[in-house]
Image (cartoon, rainbow, N blue to C red; front, side, top):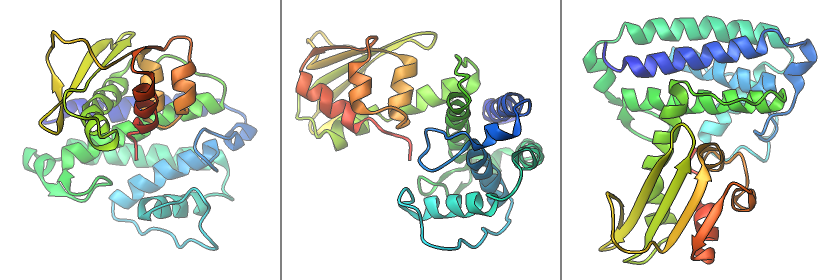
Length: 270
């Protein structure tokens, strides 16, 4: 089947969420997560709602004013699903998530190759369906880590979801350096990531365009050494730019002002 690795990553990530949360006592569902305004149950409600929406179910009506952390239409329909579940028991929401995930996995496994390549709506704009579902992996895997943090049970996760997340965030680095930082021609930024998914990424600005370089004999304008886990946490907006740079495991070489600009610009996850 085309894109089996995406289906495997979704199935593995959703199963990890269920295994983590199901044994928890009722009060654990109210634990605050790193997502502003959202508890563990709210994160589960968001995941449930998105899958229901993809299956054609209507978005609930939202009552009252939008919270300050809602900034766009995607945030609005996410919050509508969260609000709709606020009075439900947490275990009931988790059970519904399990049902919806089983339904979604079955639907994905039934797709033919053409359906995976079809261009359509996604939170990033018009994209192939496989790109959209890859984004679902990123969202679900990051929220798994949010729940782990909320329950004070963080752990390394070396499943297929982590690889998709790190690869996706790496692919966004030219945009960060070129568009957000507006780095001038000749700039070279090297990011050295340590850990199981260790890699060294070199981004250079050539003729006004930032792109990944295979190598360079030139000394980089900025070089940052940091663990994979700190990189994805900053790229997902789960830690501040200051915390990312101040971490004992992060080492900055050369242009310190550019390092601050890089860290400020690094949030990739929408």
